[in-house]
Each structure stands twice: as structure tokens, then as C-alpha cells.
Length: 49
Length: 241
Image (cartoon, rainbow over all chains, first blue to last red; front, side, top):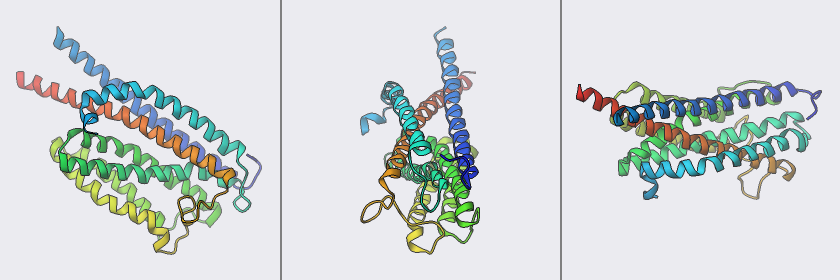
């Protein structure tokens, strides 16, 4: 990619926003999954006791 | 199909397949991004701005595809009343909304240098895509505003199925009305209008986005099943008091 070309800032902005949104979505989904799995594990262990 | 609708079997299959799906997604993104930013040539008219296409088009395709999937799962839930179908539609919505949002934003970044404007309300493709985002938000609002899951599911199914009509409007808007947005250039009669030197990177990115959606959807469904089990456990606890 030629960084000195016209309108290249629009390309950089598009990739930056896409990256931020996709990584944000990825982290949200994985962290929520982990949090719920931990809660469920505690309840199962509590029931066993 | 029926055998995958069992939550325990679904979880077992999801847990086995997820590492492979993540690995394929990472490889496809690495190849696709390298192709999009380094290997593919600039366009003879659009110059370097054409590179926005490699993130804009897959996001737009996913925005439409995910809503169709939500419509399909909602129809299945309507007919078979299977709770996993509702969970599949519910968990697909936030993912589809992000892809739809990305299509709108990256489209604006393409529109400003190419059309001279960020946005045009009179344009059918842009406006119908924005309405699709509102359908996504409305669908998610139904689930989060109604406490009773069976009631929320019943209303959410209607929102999903009505919204599918708008997906057809988005798809054919460039054929039905005069639009700033270009017409179909990949899936069209007579073959794609995009040169092969660019098409391979676009298709790689499209498959990478689809695999990413598949992985995130499987994880979200696993979370949804865990959330339902937690809700059930809480109700039992309250009942025992």
C-alpha cells in the first residue's frame, strides 16, 4: 500500500475501526462466556456440597 | 439437524470444533489482510481507496446473512418451539449488528472520497442498510426489555421475521432504484466484475469474517445455555426459600 497516496487516511480509518470493533466483540463474547462458566461451576460445586 | 438441537450434544460438538474454527479464522485473516493491504494492486480509478472494499463488503454480506439466519432460526422456533432455535437467533443479533454497523461506517469512509459525501438519506441502499441496523437494535431491545423469556422470544420472532423483508430491500435496492451505491459486482449474471487479482483477497476476507462469526456464535450460544442454567438454578433457589 502506498501511504503517500490520496485519501489513504480513509483506508487507515476503515481498517482501524474494523479492528477495534472486531477485537472488542471478540473480547466481549469470550469474557462473558468465561464469567458465566465460572458462575455455573460455583453453583454446581455448591450443590455437590 | 434434529440431533444437533439437543443442548448437551450441541455443547459437546461446539467444544470439539471451536479450536479448529479459531485456527482456520486466524489463518484466513492473516492471508486475507496480507492480500488486501500488500499483494492486491490499487484500482485504476479509485486508487488506494479500493482497499476499503476488503473490510466493507464482507461486513455488509455478514450483516445481511446473519439477519437471514436469525429469520431462519425464528421460523424454526415458531414451528418447532425449540428453545435452542431462539437462543441461536438471540445470540446472532449482537454479532450481526456489529457487522451491519461496520458496513455503514466503512461505507461512509468509502463514500466521502468517491462520492463527495459521507451519507445520503435519499439513497435506497444506504437508508435500507441503516433500517436493518435499527431492526437489529429493536430485536435486541425486545430481549433485554422483557423479563419473561417465553414472551420475549414470541415478540422477538415476529421482529426477526418482519425484518427479513428489509433484507430483500437492501439486496435489490440497487436494482430497483437509482442509487449512488454501485450495483452487484461479485454475484451477478455473466460472472464477477472485479478483477481476479482483487477477487481472491475479497473472497478470502469474506470467508474469514464468516468463520469469525461462526466461532463467536458458537461461543455466544454456549454462554446463553450457561445463562439459562444459571437462571433456572436461581429460580430453584428462590423456590426452596
